[in-house]
Picture 1 (tube, rainbow, N blue to C red):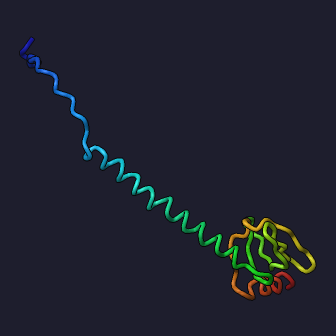
Picture 2 (tube, rainbow, N blue to C red):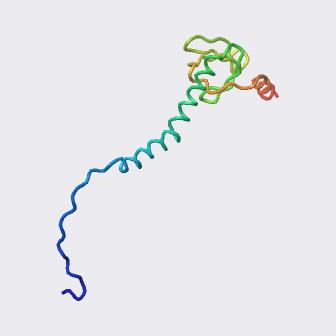
Picture 3 (cartoon, rainbow, N blue to C red):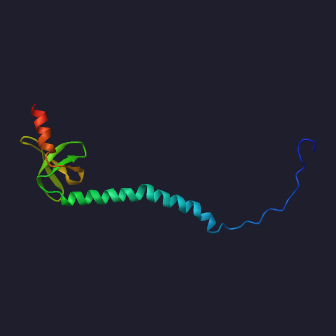
Length: 115
């Protein structure tokens, strides 16, 4: 039988060693990688969005989370009234405002819609 398969020699079982700090490098590296890849950019965007909402004033031109372009008529702590057409005002939650648009964007779009 030893012609095709070599004979197995019994060896003493290796002594179990506790992994040191070397064993923690790979999991810690993965955590650091995910922090810089996902968590840090997300918190940075959240800070910028919060700052934008705090600085928003009446007359600003905004886009909502649903893609509606309008002009801010009035705002309070939780809600914003946005004019989306002549004499058409909708009320949206403040945190649903996605971005501020440059001045004149709303007016240009209204002219395009009339023609």
